Length: 199
Image: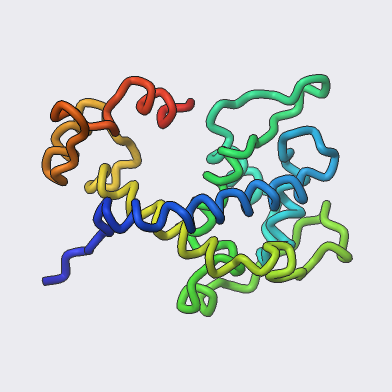
């Protein structure tokens, strides 16, 4: 029928162990890219990270990706430099996955479609093309979890507008038949919403 099929929430729940394992791995990868150990990835560190993950971007492409992922716009203490925290780095990976610019976490089909990239001047040639080593052998799992995250997001944003409205959640959850104790949905608690709406 041509309709896109998204995973059920039950499928997502069954994959929580894998999701948690991959998210912990992404935290370790974040730490390896945070060369100065500041707790945030700055623009130059992101440029180097992108090359290590197989995509040599122009400075403009790195800046655009950085700006899209830098949701809170917070600056690093001391230097005043803009940085991505761990959640924003995860968003950066998700964006890179969706638009297919990170070959190491792209599907086999999209890897073949990635164009020959331009170079970033600020990256040391010794840092180039470390391939899956930089992802510590987790590229396939990271790809699978990124895909699951995107598909799960689209359960709640079926139009693909990029925004999940709090007022739409009850309808979606009712449609999915997810109820907690007392008929209330645990996905809709104020604490859960605050956790999800972190910007």
